[in-house]
Image 1: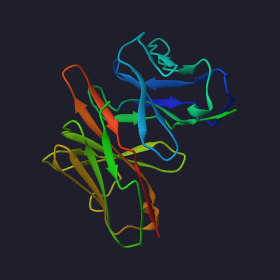
Image 2: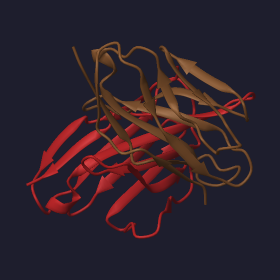
Image 3: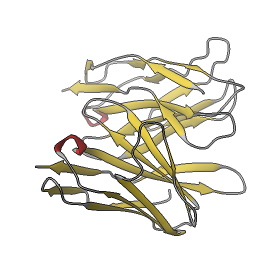
Length: 113
Length: 117
């Protein structure tokens, strides 16, 4: 099945710093790619997604570009805020054409004032 | 976006008892729901796929007799942890699949923190 690898955290940044969280994937074909965010004590929320190569997903200042050449979907934000502190998960369908997602291990982001 | 409600958000139970967790899709019908388990500081592990009107499909290593899943309607799936033990303590998250003409998207509940004492 498909799989995803993302950088381990925690990532600790000061407010307004630039954020990159790396995510690479192994997949059959070109599945949709997702980033989910989990705030403390809560479930997952879809942050952004990209459905085909070269697509850029964006939301709340976060961006990620689907790059098939490098099989990557890195998450970036130009200026993080304290409220962005959360765990971020990269995900894709477990199998081609399958709707269940498989998740990376998650990267905790801690932003200090 | 669509709303998936999970209840309870937190439960503490005694060892040997059973606990039922509900997952409801509030504003759409979901023929397929998923149950995940998340250990502290780890990723989500798929436990089972719940299909309305049929038996759930369990992932390898998940005991179907311990984790009973029922998906009796298009808006409700339940996970019952039977004869719970402390090692069952975990964060359980459900997701419901909204299948539309344009795309299919999974929406997640807010999770249930189960503590078995």
